[in-house]
Image 1 (tube, helix red, strand yellow):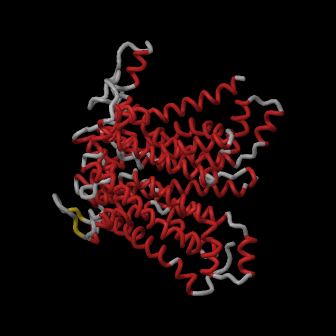
Image 2: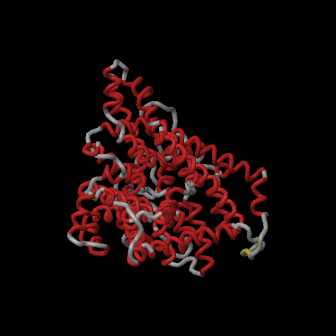
Image 3: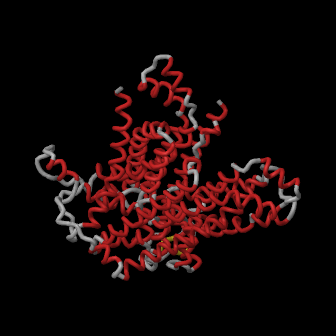
Length: 267
Length: 284
C-alpha cells in the first residue's frame, strides 16, 4: 500500500519542483508592477504589450527564430546524407564521421564554443550572422543525425529487398523508399534542433555576442544592465513554443521511440 | 541493411557534403584552438603565433587548482544527486501507462530546452527574500520571516541539479524502458518487497547504465556557464566561467584555449570510460 502511495507522491513532488521556475516566470510576466513582491500586487498584461512595442526585444526574437530556422536546415543537410550513407554502406570512415557528428553534444559546450570563436576570428567572420547560423548548425547536427539514424534502422529489410528486386538503385531507392519512410524522423530531428537553438546561449555568445543579439543573450544582458519583466514574457512564450513543438511531435510521432525506448512490440 | 562499399561515385558523393562541413567547421576549429593554446599572448591585445607552454604552465598554480577542484566537486555532487533522484523517477516513469509517459516526456523536454539564463533567473527569484518560496513558508507558519538563499553554494547546487535532471532522466529512459518487466515481477512473486526488489533486482540490472549516465551528467554539468554567475558567488565560479571570462573579457585567448583543451581531454577520457564499461556490459 505504501508503495502505491509513494509513487504519485514522489513523482508529483519532482514535477512540482520542475514546474516552479515556470510558475514564477509566469508570475513575473503577469505582475502589474516592475518588481515582483510577495504577495503580488495585481495582474496585468502590460509587459506582454510592451514586448510588441519594444524593437530591441522584437529584434532579439527575430534573430533567434531566424538562426534556429536556418541552422536547423544546415544541421539536416549534414545529418541526412551522413545517416543514409552510414545505414547503406559498411564503411569505417562513415562511423568516424558519425562520431564527429555526435561529439559536440558529448563535450561541454564551452569547448565547442571556444573552437568556433577561434575559427571565426581567424577567418575574419567573427560577429557575423552567418557564423552563428553555421555554428549552431554544426553544434546541433547530433539531434537530426540520431533521429534519422533511428528512422533508417526501423525500415524493414524486406521493403528494401522488394525495391531492389524491382530495379530501384541509389538515388531512386533514396527518393521513393527511404525518404518517405524517414520523413517523420527528419521532421522531429529538425524540431529538436530548432527548439534547442532558440534557447542556446554560450555558442551564440562566443561567436557573435556583441553584434547579433539572440534572445538568451538579450535576457542575460537585461538581467545585468536594466531589468525588465519583458524578459519573463519572452521566456514564457518560448517555453510555450517548446511545449507546442514537443506536443505536436508526441501527437503525430512516436516520442518514446524517438527518445530511444523500445515499444512493447519490439520485446 | 548495412553492407559493402559504395560501388559507384554517386555513393561517395553523397557523403562529401557532410565530410566537408564537419571538417571545415568542426575539425578545423578544434585544430585552430589547439594551435592557439600554444601561442604567445600579447599583453593588452591579441596573440601572436609561437610555441610556448606558458599557458599550460599556469595550470600548476594554486588559483587554477582551486577552481579545477571546485568544478570537479560541484559537477560530481550534482551528478550523484541527479542519479539518486532520477533513477527511481525514471523507473516509475517507465512503469506508467504510455499516454502518461508521453505527457511527462513532453514536460521534461520542455524543461530541458530551458536556457541556463532562464533557469538561473527564475531560481534566483524563487530563492530571493522579496518574492521567493520562503514567503510561502512564512505564510504557512513554517518559518518566522522570509530569508534570502541566493546567491550561495546551495542555490548553485539546486540550479545545477535542475539543469541536469531532465537530461539524467532522458539518458536513463532508453535502458530502463528495455528492462524486462518479468524481472521485477519474478522477484515480487518470490516474495520480495517493492523496495527490496528495487535495490536487489532493478539497480544491479542497470548498473552499467547508472555509471554511464553518472559520467555523462558529470560532463554535462561541467559545461554549465551561467548558473555559477547567477546563483553562486565569485568563489563558486567554475572552469567554464573562467574559460569564457579569459576568452571574451580578458581577451586572453591562448590561456582560454589551453583550459578548453584540458577540459576536453578530461571529458573525452571520462566519455571513453563509459564506452569501456558499455563494452564490458555487452560481453558479459
